[in-house]
Length: 276
Image (cartoon, rainbow, N blue to C red; front, side, top):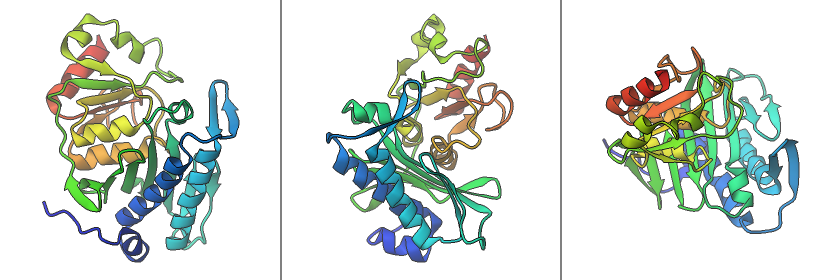
């Protein structure tokens, strides 16, 4: 696989590729997140135990500016600002923006966050990027292949299940409880004898599955319109991971939720554990 050149990603994003535009937008948001890290940040309550910070709002603003300048006709759905209609010419195209996934980590000065941008068209995610502000990496896809960009260079994402590290999302809501609880796997000897659980509380871990840094990621929830998961799911699919719902159905069907696994063997083992 030949990695695409990346000397001037933002210029090319404006002129050409939706994938490069996703990268440019995610990088713009990540720059804000990095700049505001460790500073005093106002908080805005969203739900019990959940809030946004000034960094979330500011990062989303710059992401929207990049997208709107390059694709004025597209719809944009931001976690903080909601839905913004475009000019109408290409309104069937919808960008999903999560400006800071891992806000609770970030507010506690824990460097485990991601900035997620995804483009959905005709029911398919055709471009996506997930940026790690602190590692200086952007995981991205053009909808067909997937790469990680570091220092302006792209390397293909290669899933690898050999670590047996499995990230569990323990954040509510849990719509499939009591039939399924991710926390229950932690009490199952069959799980802990085979896998090594991790919890980073950010969808950065979904990108890590595509990159071979995690064997799998598991979460409950209805994810079909999720600004949090669209980018990570697209990355895993483009990288060749096995991506299904919790009951093994195609993504966004059945009981919903997500198992993103590096390979068939890892996926089969996790699916069997969930089913027992």
